[in-house]
Image (cartoon, each protein chain N blue to C red):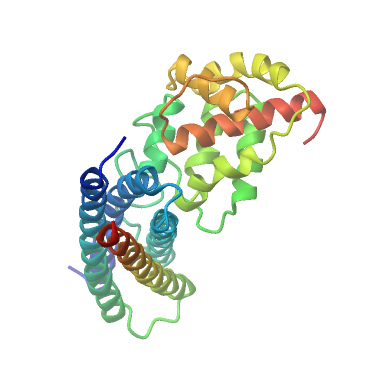
Length: 86
Length: 232
């Protein structure tokens, strides 16, 4: 049978992994922002459909990263609240 | 350097700067956190924490798929204006966890890889992969699977599982044995056998498997079921 200390320790480890994941998502967001800015500067004035499609895909990637971060924050809050109440 | 080549260089810099690696790292960390939380908090009041993390991972898969699409579109743009990208339509192993694992499973690590087709749906990839598996070609199966955006690839296992409600799972298991060895030579026989039994809800030893293994085995099983039932 697990003790409270063991459950809290397992949650702490999981939260550490989530935080590392969040750091990677932030790094991805930073690189994505830079890529979008660089692309905008490079192809300014282009009406090419592939350029539009690339921009759209990059915008979708940014939205997905934001949604990912929101979901991790919700999960962390729930897990930490639970751990504090043990 | 001409102005056009300068433009190509800038676009190529954008393409190579897309955060594929960061998304892959994030996915790995969130996946391990999800597994740990799910095991720890099962049946607890905080049991929605793990599903929330699983949802976060799904968003990362979708982000990875969108980044691949963006890269493909940039390649297409360069090609259409007469500036073929160095990284153009064919890529090699080491760039995508989904496709890398498919290469291993199908015994084609290092072979030139077709470009990912961002518009492909789960059903379209499954149909193409099942056709390839039914034809007995590991090369065609690999082609169908690595053309899929990673997010689509990861979803294949669940979609295939939904098509395996069969009258005689034992018959399917026997029918899959030879086909599995021919199509997925990189999958250890014991793991393949266990995954087949698990997919068909037959008694199976516990097995830890890559999600791509589950997807590829699912595709092969669907091809066997279709062959036995005359479906297409």
